[in-house]
Amino acid sequence: MVKNKLLKTVVYLFLIIWAVIVLFPFYWMILTSLKDYGVYNGEFVPSLYTTKPTAENYVNAFSQVELGRYFLNTFLFTVFTTLVMLVVIVLAAFAFSRLQFRGKNIVFALFLALMMIPNELVIITNYVTITNWDMRNTFTGLILPSVTSVFYIYLLKENFEQIPDELYKAAKVDGTSDLGYLMRVMVPICQPTIVTIVILKVIECWNSFVWPRLITDDPKYFLASNGIQEIRENGFGRENIPAMMAAVVVISIPLIILFLCFRKKIMEGVSQGGTKG
Image 1 (cartoon, rainbow, N blue to C red):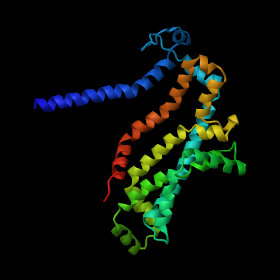
Image 2: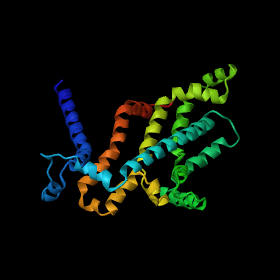
Image 3: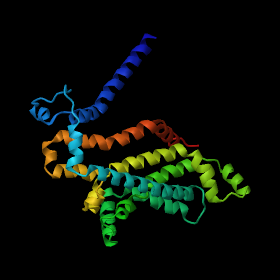
Image 4: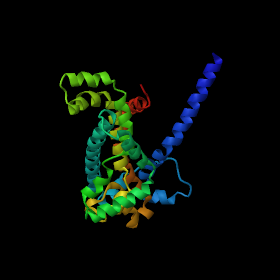
């Protein structure tokens, strides 16, 4: 009994320490965003708290660059990219898991082989393709290279294959089409995994930095990540770190809320994806 209590105490102590390590960067980011510019620069040793929090840094973040516009662009980019990707991966996963066609296993093996290609090579190829198609500085050029994912197709295919074949045969006897079976049976059953994929894709799009920097040089198409970089490049970001942290806080809030609202779905989807049979 005493041994179990001691073990539980050690486990909880370890979890508390780990939680502090993980959450401290977020605390430091928020703390810095609330510090007065003069107070921040006057600290020889950084302080772990502030007695006079200010919201002026948030005002500066939105006034120095068009952060509101970049925020809207990021929202549109994330929504459209995620919706198109969802259609593509659901149909592809269904084809590989339920439909029978010649060379399916070979095609899927070659498809999985794409995961071994370094991301840098993919970015270079995408850049050349989008440039040749004259899609630079367009939302289409931003969205098109991100509308599919081999990993998400593989993950969803594994979930679809866990659904008993008897359901598919029964649906076909009832005259249900393949698309009807997909939408009425497979998608609802695998909803936790689909929700997890959607959330991961939203986070990926929201934090996208390298591709938007390559394919856009027109401020009309800048995303939030471009805005933060613009803060640094226009001079005031290097001097006014609190304002830069304020911009990062504003951009991070939607993702934090999204995770807190759907954390149970994420865990359910991950556990379902790791269960076979």
